[in-house]
Amino acid sequence: MEALKAEEFLAELISCREAFWEKMNAERKSYGAEKPLSPAIVLRRLQFGVVMERKAAEVTARWVGEIPDLDLQQPMSEYVVNELKHTSILRKRIAELNGDPDALWNQPLKELKELWDYHASLESLCELIASVQFGHEEFFPRTSKSFIARVQSIDPQTASVYRDTLLADEAGHEWIAPEILRRYATDAKTQKKCLEALKRGCELFGKAIQSFNQSLPA
Ligand SMILES: [Fe+2]
Ligand SMILES: [Fe+2]
Image 1 (cartoon, rainbow, N blue to C red):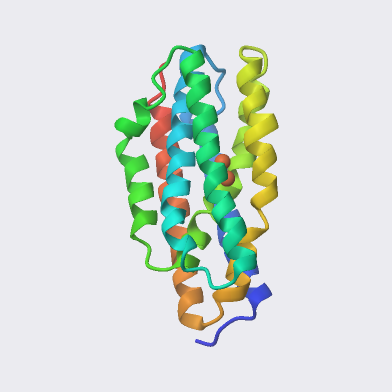
Image 2: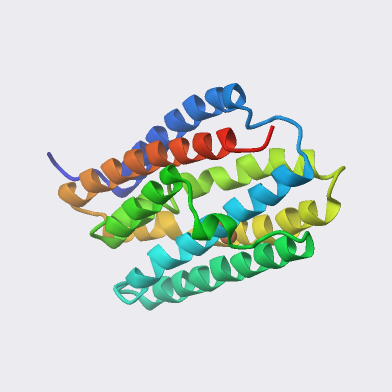
């Protein structure tokens, strides 16, 4: 197999990701992902966020030292700082709501652990980026919008945390992942591994989301 040109390669990753999103989005309602929120569900959702933010930082941090170009290394290190900052913000909000900030961190659902164990096991920067930042992290703004709309009336402070901090920062780092893949995933073997990582990451993410929703109090 010959290597694809950068833009063709990115287009293929996008088409895999979007096909997965279509499927997951169609299934989301069937397991209650869009049901009305209660304070207990909001708390659980924030605890889920703690795991997602902190793990994204942890699995990425080990690769920062391997990024050859400083113009990508520096923003990627800032990405790690941002995700840890988001973890702190979410933990603080949970404490204000009298919850345990690390409830899911200390006892993750099996599927949530599988997702992040998979990311930690990946063997190259490009695979990690394809699977996390170019993959399921792209779904975060989409699912957050629906969460914000539903949480606004019962907990406007939490809605503001998502809208004004987490989502606002997200928009600032979206350019990094495609640029890393464009620059470093240039041979056929790496491109193939990236596609596999993106597919597997999306699959495991879908299972984690489903398991999370099914674990919510009625
Ligand atoms: Fe974040
Ligand atoms: Fe993020």
